[in-house]
Image (cartoon, rainbow, N blue to C red):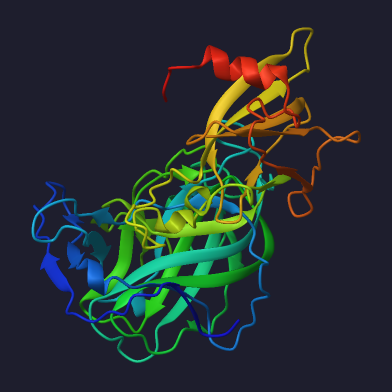
Length: 407
């Protein structure tokens, strides 16, 4: 694919309102708060485009599920004269092209606690998307260079991949998009999701993803986002850093949230849920657009179509036990999870209608290669309430016992 793919086909036809957010200085020597700004975009002028570097081919339908999602990046104005519009916050220090800014991300998988031995190959990364806002036309071509730094959770400079706060240069650089920045061409005012292909790079549990961005107007910059975070819905630490002349990533300015960064890739299990039997209103949508009415049905999507509860059964001991958490599907009904060998089954249940599907451990066990995961598919069927693949008395009993209750 070349050029841009329109995700919300609404032309940007009016002037976007920008409000400078003056901040109080932080009472620390040598540190000031970041000058974040707010843009208010009228509903009829909202345009969101996912765009790819020029002259780079993307095979259709090749995208992996999300492994990290900075979905909460726009505030839908509910009432008043601006009702239906979107308010967002962005960061522009006026020196993007000459400075490298990094945001830290903690992925799922591996041990809950850091540090971890590295490389631990927690996930396999295939795509990075960075969200930017342009309140005016770009200053020439918009360019982007992405660099990915690994971290094993240690602050000791003697570890293999210490915290980039404590090392200089590129000691723990995992991947670089190239010394020649990717070119997205001249862009008009709007919201853009700049997508960078990554050639299935194994990455660590903790990452720093840095950006070097060119062509930005003064009324535009990196969009500030938060949550829901990795596939266990654990958010990032809510801060970002600038690489100083000595080559360290430091807190030159006080942080304000996280950048809008979405990662696609895979853990060692990828599930595909066929939901074609469900109505259009129940189909999952791209969760990166969760706050917007992407299909113009009058309902802001949020994550109601994408959130699912997950139950995993661990049978490693004498008494099997079940663990539960929440994750999200992508717009094609795909999801990916880090699954240990002790997990016998995975059940996925939708939040909005209670339907479920189940996946069982293969005879030869789950894959141990994150770039070549175990894959499985299941069909979500009306009436199969317990997700065992058949419609029987057990489903009827579940409905009867739940009669009259609500979410």
